Image 1 (cartoon, protein in one colour):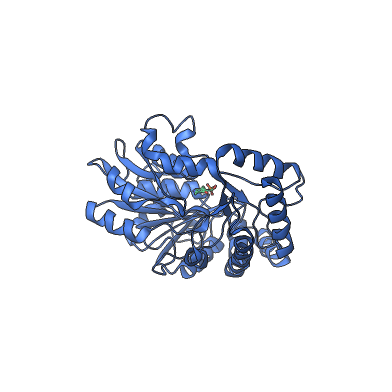
Image 2 (image 1 turned 60 degrees about the vertical axis):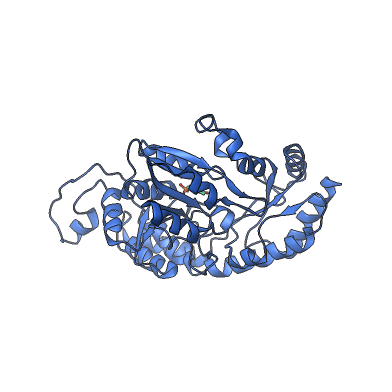
Length: 377
Ligand SMILES: Cc1ncc(COP(=O)(O)O)c(C=O)c1O
């Protein structure tokens, strides 16, 4: 399908292409010096001690849960309104995701008060997801997790470069932060992810599990640092390859500029839609200033209107999306009392994500706004 206005869009520059070509010409394609350089650059960007590159955001979450000590029989609190990977990571460890509710129509993210209500003696961790680029209240969750001796894992797949209410970079408040470089994300390389942590022991564990729990990796043996290896646990192949690391290194310098452009466009959307009788804007100006603007969702009066609006915008070539709540997915629903997830259920049914990318112009935003207002008449 060729959209008049796709949900999002990316530009691969000549420099990006050259960085990947240079890597291909070097003849070393698996995890090696570019991955190391990307990890170092990423750690500097986020402002944290350790960054470990992996094959996807999902792999990052999986390793974070394992390194964080999540085991069979544990419970991990996960927002009902998230992408499935946040909950799947818990299931990979044979633990149970306990879905929690959103704050409400001002903030889609998980509600710390609801998290507190769901803590039991089996709870091992909380996964705080920063939805759409807006920081969840990880500072309050940090206090809660410390009180109950729980791991705090941040799912930063959608929020690279965002800041918390107290000005901390998302991903640096929890024990572990998990990023995604999937092709729709702000720092996209196709597929890829990063685990960050201030904790040297957690970093060592993630590094080990990333590559079969081998005591040395291929690059180290190639360099002559080791001749053989031992395998000390059950690990995975969650390595990032060199061409993707080269692309990530080339693109990371542009992330902040892209976020600033997205923020300008979001402000234009908000100014144009504020006061519309059928549209509610999420978050406030402070949150807009701190967000990295992965996506721009609005709330419509009900699910029926939302679905009709999406279908009609689709009909004129404007791509939109919406996240189903995890509780409505066949694999994750049913086990919990629906009444206690009422806010996230309501938000899942009413939100509509409008097109947003750093390539859009103000005229593009105006076009989407006009089409949206048209279908709401
Ligand atoms: C909130 C969230 N968590 C995790 C992921 C998983 O990342 P990946 O696709 O890189 O595995 C995504 C996106 O894809 C996401 O949006």
